[in-house]
Every structure is written in structure tokens, then in C-alpha cells.
Amino acid sequence: MKWHDMKEAACPVARAMGVVGDRWTLLILRECFLGMRRFDDFQKSLGITRHLLAERLKRLEAMGLLERRPYQERPLRHEYRLTESGKAFAPVMLALQDWARSNLPSEAPSPLSFILRDGGEEIDPVVTDRHTGQELNHRTVLMRYRDPAKPSD
Image (cartoon, rainbow, N blue to C red; front, side, top):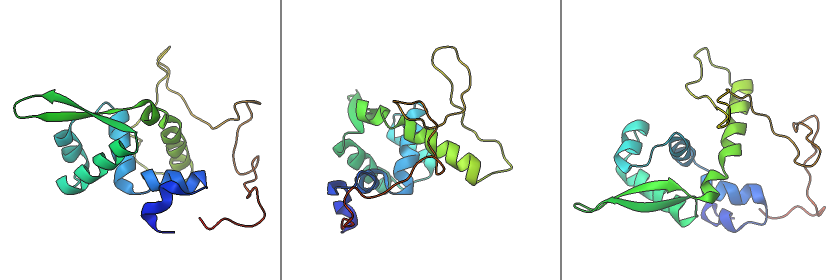
């Protein structure tokens, strides 16, 4: 399967990678969660080329994670806002931070913190099962194909 066809794959992990499977896309989404909305701000913060940033923003818009809204008429300028689908990506960002903190330690403290909207406390996120509340990790979960014949993606 070609990389650009991943978003059509039967496997949910492959489909997700078809949308966010490069380093810039995840960093753009991180900046959106931090409140960034404007092209020039993304470009300055990330150090990404204008061409590549425009390409990634268009793809995120096409995939329904961001929406583009005009914020200035002359010259016409747009900002990018997370859609409901984009906002639903928040648990993935939490899980990525948790994994990196545990498996890719850094001597420098993380510049990110996750704060509960209600109450304002900093949280230490974990992935849990929505039905049982059990913490999910490699010790508690077995991943396998539903069909013994491995799919092509």
C-alpha cells in the first residue's frame, strides 16, 4: 500500500498514520492545542518551510482536523482552528507525552503541562478502558488481528 493511500486502510492505526504520520503534522496539532492559529505563528514557532506548512495545513483541513477561517479581509488572511475531530485528538497527545516521558527521558523539564479545565490541577495522564476503568498498557492488553489472515495494510 502506498503511503498516501493509508487513510483508506481497514486498520485504524494505518488510517490514523495516513493523517498524522509525519513529524510536522503532530507538531502543528500540538501548537493548535496550545492556542496557535495563524500561519506566520506556526512557521515562526516550528521553523518549517512555508511550502511544507501550507501543504500540511491543507491536508489537516481536508481530513477534517482543522478548519480555516478568515480573520482579516485586506489582505485576506486565515486562521486555523481545531474542529471537533481535531479536538478529539487530545487523548493521543496526552498518550504521546506520557510515552515520551517514560521512554525517552530528558534532563530538561518538559515545556508542556496538562491542566484540568475544572480545578486547574496538573494531571498525569494514563490510558484506561472506558468500561472497566482499568489502566491499559503492554501488560494488560494484547493486540491481535480479528481475522487470523493478516490484512495487507
